[in-house]
Image 1 (cartoon, rainbow, N blue to C red):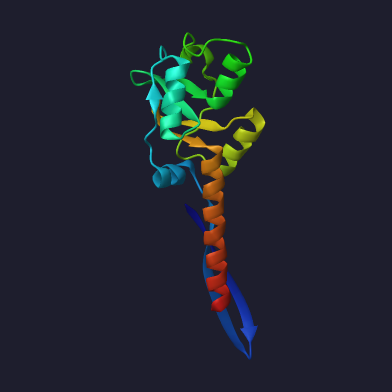
Image 2: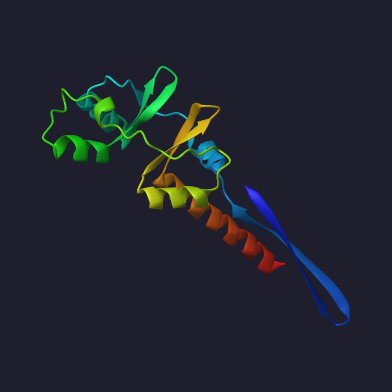
Length: 167
């Protein structure tokens, strides 16, 4: 996290007072990954959609990462399933995750701030973003992760301000 330092000077009874506090202002993708971890559930591109859905149900998750060896290919989400299989009358047994996965994602790194992620989620209508470092998948963040991080950052800011007021 990045901290901004604030200093306030005030004058009372011919004495100058200085008050000082830190305010958390920017949270990054690395903060999210440090909190939630970097492990992701992966499947191979040839995995059937029904098998991927079973994994998602067993793990209580809304997506799986599609990998070929160590290469990130895409993400298959519940949304992909509903729009590209169910609504098109395709078979979950005979359709592979490679056939329906989302693969066009903006690049983000651990150094990106949460505001950029929120802008990407909104502008691109996404729910998940892959974090890429040195051409390898470093983790996945979700819109929910960003909301949680924003709430934590706001709670820290409130705590800092309460401590400042009590000085």
